[in-house]
Image (cartoon, rainbow, N blue to C red; front, side):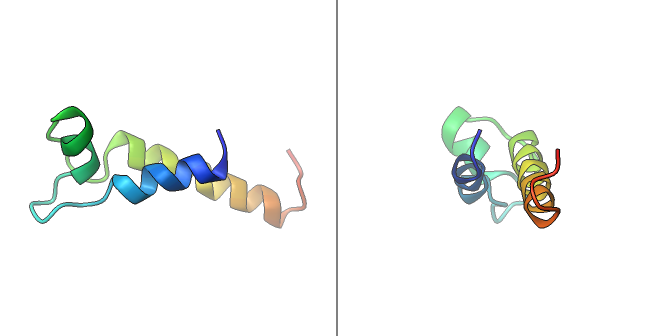
Length: 59
């Protein structure tokens, strides 16, 4: 997974007006509260990559 792919997930899985995830509804016709699993995963992945970059590439 790359940072670009995680960014794409975050750009689609946004909160709708009704508080449900717009990306889940659009892609899978599924009513999921926001933040959905995909959005939570992408946020965690992005935070880990930023931390790794800040610490100078340490594992």
